[in-house]
Length: 260
Image (cartoon, rainbow, N blue to C red; front, side, top):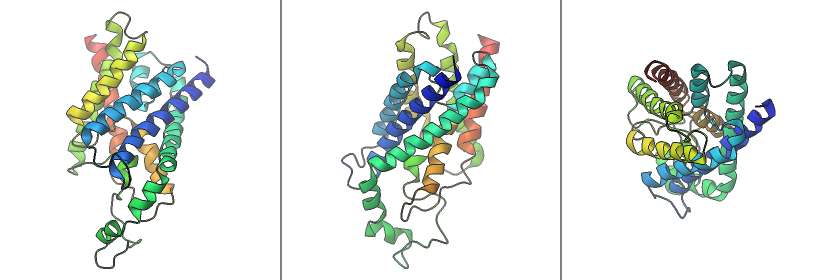
């Protein structure tokens, strides 16, 4: 597999993954969206279909689309360590592009949502406007771009991401045990189903990042975009959806080597 195959496959595949995944979050969150308040089922299935679409598009690179998957495969010996930086860099750049496209697709809805008088008043009830020197940890649209915990407990949040990612990566590593699954399009479909299952079963505490690029890239875009009243990007939490999935992937690779 050439470096250009890795770069283009991971860049475009991850961009589409984030475009569709972040897109469903925007659809459910933003005012003047036809899907506003569609709920958690819409988000989990939307992300599952996003994984499915991005993975098929990125098939020429192996469709990792996730630094945790790349790390797990490298530890397991399926990917050369020298290719790991290119994989991860391409994934992070693709995630940033995808998040930017979500903003463009929902430009009017972002504006309507963030300038809504009710929202603005809720951000600073005393003055009816946002105090730019005291923005909250997580702004009102940060959930469109990246994840955040329902209960802020660093150890629990980290463990949740480790467990959820370990389940995903262990499934990917063990696909080869089922004849033909890893080399057919069915394998990609099964991974998408697993992502939906993880969202339904383990997504409640943290929003199930299970992918460092999926969280960090869009969080950087949130910090950079000229969104009015956007609030903070919650950088104090940002390390958890990066470290947790990487640890979970390493754990899954270790289990795979020992047990299978």
